[in-house]
Amino acid sequence: SAVISQKPSRDICQRGTSLTIQCQVDSQVTMMFWYRQQPGQSLTLIATANQGSEATYESGFVIDKFPISRPNLTFSTLTVSNMSPEDSSIYLCSVAWTDTPGYTFGSGTRLTVV
Amino acid sequence: QKEVEQNSGPLSVPEGAIASLNCTYSDRGSQSFFWYRQYSGKSPELIMFIYSNGDKEDGRFTAQLNKASQYVSLLIRDSQPSDSATYLCAVSGGNKLVFGAGTILRVKS
Image (tube, rainbow over all chains, first blue to last red; front, side):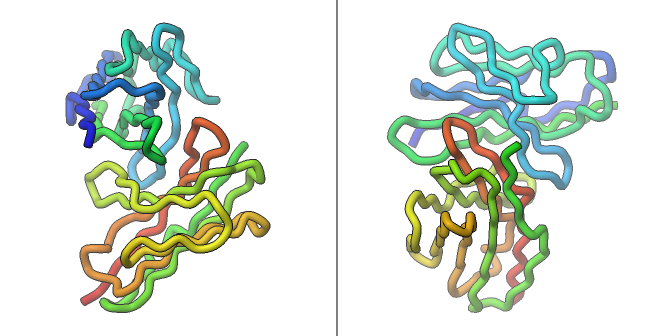
């Protein structure tokens, strides 16, 4: 089965800084998504990463805070900008396959902002 | 706002029993329904999906869907300690998956 590589797996960052998370898939996919899972909570969709165009953000999430790139069909990045302790969370990349139901998730990035 | 509701639990069952996990959703236009299992510190893993009313069985797992009642459930037969995890219900009416808060299942040996 296809592999989703996400990095870094974890990081501890100072408030006010930014972190870029990478998601690499070993085959082309049409749909890529970024989710956030806060401690003890379920998954919240941040945005859909669109290849070659601006990401589509969900209510409550804005491009200035969470800029997303998707230069091709196998790669995407999510940047968490100007971080505060409230951004401490697990960030998950997810992909949808054309011939497989549901989404597959990357291993996640555990972010702690101090 | 599409909503997916689950009882957070924990649901405790003895080893070998049937675990029943339930989920309701608000969007009548939802078409696809998924159950994910998430072990502590790990990412969610798809275990079942269902599109049509009725039951769908896969090994020890059975998903049940009732669109009229906007209700989907997951039955785990012969529960094992290794089934202890958080089970997330997810619903899709298009390209996006909306997740419930998850139910913690604890299987006691």
